[in-house]
Length: 525
Image (tube, rainbow, N blue to C red; front, side, top):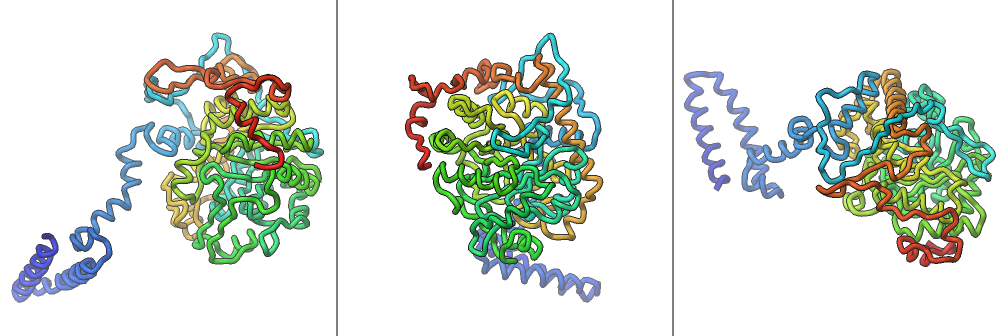
């Protein structure tokens, strides 16, 4: 057994050193190394780790290799397309656009056209020019008095705390330069969101950070004061998040420094756990009344909700509540279950929630079928990284898109997946100032703006290649998806369309919606 071999080798090495020492005095220094290995070996023999207990000293190689395994795989063993959650090909293209350099690729595609999951679009022989002005649109329904002219691509919710101060500064300055909006995430409006004056979408989560009482309830007067600031353009009420639906947020204690504690109005140096549900309401009608209250307190600014689609009957319950109360959110953000986060229970990320390309058309069709679609904008959030991603999401019913991790790449993220440790190697997701100072705010801000510009340019060119001159003309017929090594089919074949107001006509409801529509109640989720 190796334990005996280790003891034998240790003893033999000591004998050799002692015999050698008289003939070559510097050999005495080897006793220091011998003592270190001996101490480490004795420690390992008493370790609770089975490997170290059975294989003292050399067993540490196993843990050393495991520690660098993600880097080894990413740098040496991944193919261009196999990386997760974003492939090397995606990251390379994002970085090229952020640098303002060419996104051209030589010698043809590296993708497997026949692989399951492959998506493509049918181009037209009469391509169109898509004008730049259609990459913006007005957000604000009939009950909104301060609509916002928004870009069709904006920075998705990422909080100060999850991201470093320099990452927030770079993103907000980039949003200012590029003319698009920066979602604050649920961690409140920090001084770093405000310094450069970029447009903000203020996200409110279940803990109401930045406008909460000591007991964690909603503080209306503090909200009113902050929401009416000119920089705040929209309010987003987060019901659930794709990466951890029905779980609430978590910011580890290691990241909760004095500055973050003051921004969020929480205790310093303690785990910051948001509740899973909102304490201010527990019914669909209560949700809409709270949205209406937020809109009034904000002075009539656009107020919407963000959710990962879970039980489909619950979304239809919200639709029925809209019809009953007459209250309309100005927008709905659908977060895909494949979305990312700095820290979440693994099984929540892996197993809960609907994939964005299934959730989005369902929500769109439900709003059409209840006659509500024209009253609000639909925003897609979930691994939107490239222009083609935007084409797909808008073909499936979205009006706009949000992106998070691609903007992280533009400020230097390398997908090290150490976000929850406070030891991010690039300074993007850490509160350690020695690490975060690596981000050159001015330089990275230009990368943020360049990435946004390049992605919208690619989106316009792709949409034009499909023969349309406006995003609203994109339809599910145009996007093909291959389920297996079989012929691909357009998304239209997997979507049951509804006519405007069809669910309200009193006739037969299509089977794809009937059980959910029947189970939905405005008075309960």
